[in-house]
Amino acid sequence: MEATPPSEPRKRGRPKGSTKAKAEKEKEASGGRPVAKMRGAVGGNKNSAADENYAQWKLLVPVLYDWFAHHNLLWPSLSCRWGPVLETGTYKNKQRLYLSEQTDQTVPNTLIIANCDIVKPRVAAANHIANFDEDARTPFVKKYKTIIHPGEVNRIRELPQNKNIVATHTDCPEVLIWDVEAQPNRQAVLGAAESRPDLVLSGHQDNAEFALAMCLAEPFVLSGGKDKSVVLWSIQDHVSTLASDANHYTGSSGSIVKAADNPSIGPRGVFQGHEDTVEDVQFCPSSSQQFCSVGDDSCLILWDARIGGNPVVKVEKAHNADLHCVDWNCHDENYILTGSADHTVSMFDRRHLTSDGVSSPVHKFEGHTAPVLCVQWSPEKCSVFGTSAEDGLLNIWDYEKVGQQKESGLKSSNAPPGLFFQHAGHRDKVVDFQWSVSDPWTIVSVSDDGEFSGGGGSLQIWRMTDLLYRPEEEVLAELQKFKDHVIECNKD
Figure 1: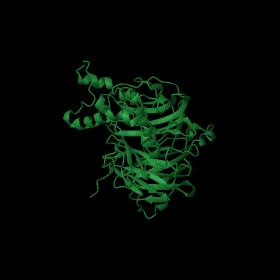
Figure 2: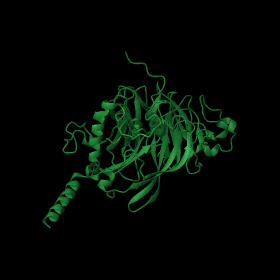
Figure 3: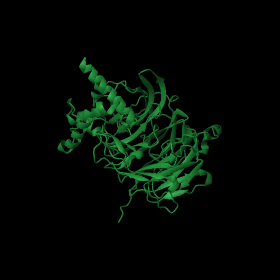
Figure 4: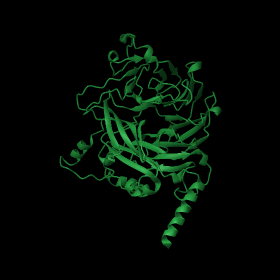
């Protein structure tokens, strides 16, 4: 007998009510007295194995990483996204970063805009990246602007055509659009008035919390929610409604934004086909009319807005549990990834999806020990993708390596097929991550591991060493050259 699905979607981060500021936790733990923190001390012996694994990972940082930066957060963040590149330099680039803050209501929830210094490949010294402070904030990340958000920020997505424009999901039916450069900088103090979105997208009939995507081809927005619907908007429609009466928009049930104070637009289309909450959506990279969605009904659905609101293909049992995430390959549009609460990631070929509701994945990747929360294809190589999960791991896979014999000494003999790198720097669930398009192989990731640090979680920006992904012959030639150099130095 199958379990009854919960009435509320499971939150990606810490449950509401359990989030506390770092200073408050320290004060409670010490009875009001200052206390020295020991990372990983929470929970006693039950965390000893995790602490040992983390210690082993930390010893390998100078070997496995070309660059690594750790930023201890005051509050948990459920989403992290790259913004526009601001400056390019000889040794580092400066880029925007978008983060959320999930507070306990003693201060407002916020959308944070930060400036990040991204060190270029083969610049950082090994001893520098190895000696990061786990309980500190890296100087590479500096807050630039704060937006007081109406409700906690569950998901952030940037507009590819203008990365200063971002969309956010919160616990309401609407999607909120923000021009982060035009928005005033705010101070997040109790009682402060909420920032006003630049645009509100209406169309859902119930809360839409996580499923959110922006289109590469045109300024279109896609969303999914508890109303089991997928909703499509064009931001360009805002131009044609600027002169319309604000009273035309009546708002959706449960709205937490005031329609009269915010310009709003309705959807281009509403698509029905799921039987439970829609958890994630994604556009086909070359189209604003083709997209896919996954949900708590275990279904993967492909849509085409040009032929109506019904599914084009519906895979009834894409996984054996809820589906949390989906991504469409921007290099080869035949391939779609899905991640599930059954701990697995599946890769589907849309050419082989059938309308009878039964389709087999090209391959099922089994390397996580907890529900998968995020999947994303690499912008650098068509066969590479990343996955993060509640087990605290961010795995990097290459499906071209499936079936190949593992020859590298850095890989364990029992590694799952296709897995070639495992980022183990987070101490708890990795709720979101994103590859950088402008800095190859650089990733930003956030985790809800505040219980280990007394804080709100961790932000990490990292890049694996290129010896792990470059062509084998190039790597061997470089290592041989280095070996010859060492031998010559020893002779001298």
